[in-house]
Length: 447
Image (tube, rainbow, N blue to C red):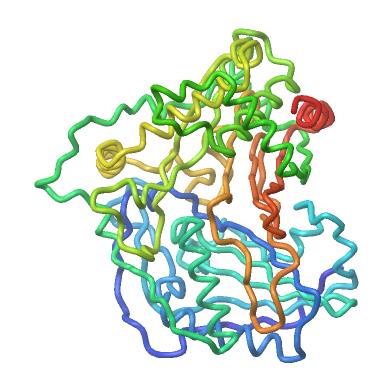
C-alpha cells in the first residue's frame, strides 16, 4: 500500500525566460504522455525530500522548458507548442508498507506502477506537467524515485542528461553541463534540401493477423503479461556467433552483427514462434535509431529534445523461422543503414508538411487511447544498450535498480544492460498472456 503524504510544486531556482519555444517535427509526433522510469535505493537520508526538491529546482533552471506546459497550437493539425512559463514540477512524497526486497527482480508490474505518479491525460493539456516525480519511503529504510518525463520533451539521451545534472546538484558537485535548447537546429536550411525523397510507405500501419479483418481491435482486448528476463554475456555471445556464421566479412567492411542485431533478431524470431503464426504472416520489428551523429554536421553536443527516427524490419514468419538467425540480423542491419543525413532530413521535412500529426500518437487530443497497434503479429524493441544509465546518486549512493515502469503493450520490449556492467542484458517484454510461457522457453532453448 502506497500513501501520498505531501505534494510539493518545484519551480526553477531563478527566473527563466517567459517564451513560446519552437517544437520541431520530430517532437510533434511524440505521445502526449510520460516515459516512466523507476530508481531504487537501499537507503536515504532523513532530508531526502529537501535534497530532491532543492536540487530539482536548480536543474529546472538549466532545463527550464521542463518547467513549462504544452498547449495546442493555433495552426491545428494536432500540433503543440511549448509555453515556457515556469509553472513547475510536482514532487510527491509517499510512504509504502513494503520493503525493497518485496519487489524481487523488479519486474515492471502494478506494484511498480504505484511508485510512479499517474497522470490523467483527459486533463487539459496546458495543465499537465512535463515532469512528474515521486519519492517513496519503504519500511526497510530504502527509497524509490519514480520519474516521468514528457515524450514530447526528451528522448532517452536527453532525459538521462537531465537526471545526471539533477543528481550533481543534489551532491553539490560540478561543473554543470547545460543542455542545447534550440530545437530549430533540426530544421533543414533551404540551401541543404535532401537529395532523396521520403517514402511515406515507411510510416504505413503495421501488419495485422492473417484472416482477421481488423485484428488489432481483437488483439488489444487480450490480457497482457510482463516478464523481466536475463541474458548472460555468454548467451549473448552465442547468439552473436550464430548470427555471424554466414556473415560476409569480405564485402561488408569487416563489421559483424552487433549484440543488438543478434539479440533483437532472436527475440523477434522467438515471439513469432511463440505466437504460432502461419508461414505467410507478415511481421514487423519496429525500433528507433538515434540520428544525432548521422546528420551532417552532427547535432550539437547535449542537444535536448528528440533525435530518434522509427526504423522497421519486415519479413514473413515462415521466412523468419526457416532461415538462420543471421538472416533476421541482416534485415535489422539493412534497416539501420538506411538512416543517413539525407533520409533523416527528408523524413523531418515530410512530417513538417503533414496536415495532421495526430495519427502517430497513442492518445487522441482528449487523452483517449488510439493509434496504430504494434502488438501481435509485430514487435517493438527499445534498446537502452548505449545509454549511460547508471550512477544516479542523489547523495545516498547509486541506485540498486533502474528500469522502465509499466508502460507496455503487447510486443513492447526493452533491452537493458545489467547494472553490474558484466555484459549481460535484462529483457523486459510485454506479451499476450497465452504466449508468454512459450516465449520464455524459446528464448533460452534457442540459444
